[in-house]
Image 1 (cartoon, rainbow, N blue to C red):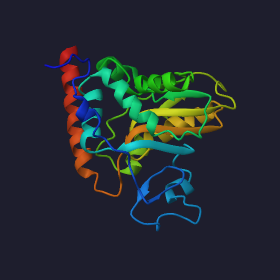
Image 2: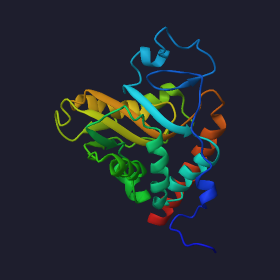
Image 3: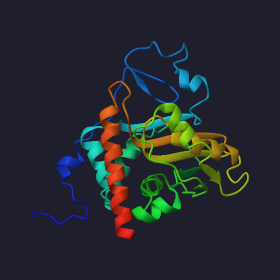
Length: 244
């Protein structure tokens, strides 16, 4: 061993993830596309035109694949909270410098899942962004509905699964504020959309989502979701066994 590190990943592997690049993408949710066909003349995709996104903008560092996906799995399912620092660095790279916000809000976990895991990965990432921007972290939303794992569900079923899952901790507590909503991964955006609506009901005028990675819909995501579903279920089973 040449060095002692609290992160069980070498520097070479930590430096491998690359930013997501796309020639065509929605100007609002930043979803990448193979061509401009799904976009209107303003560059907005059909989902955003229908108002289904819930948030006003979405930013991510990279694609949810390869080394980046493995690092996020180790962070969340492997329970290695020290990975919040290097992943937070990548998260900060995904945030445009011209954007400005009044507060940072992490996507909350249901209390039961947080107790099982021992931490909320989104909150740890939010604190890393706060450290770099000097913005306050506000845990002003709670998850009031325990939901099944999103992996493996269709887009419509994902949205139904997280419908009304979040509630602000007070009325108008974000009155007139621009909020940066932080999570680890964006797949279809259903969870973030539900949370963003709760923030809007609390008075937020603008909500942007920032994630470390997002599923690249230009490539088949079925294999990712199958593996994520199996890993999530295995993790939850192990957690329940350890509790018992």
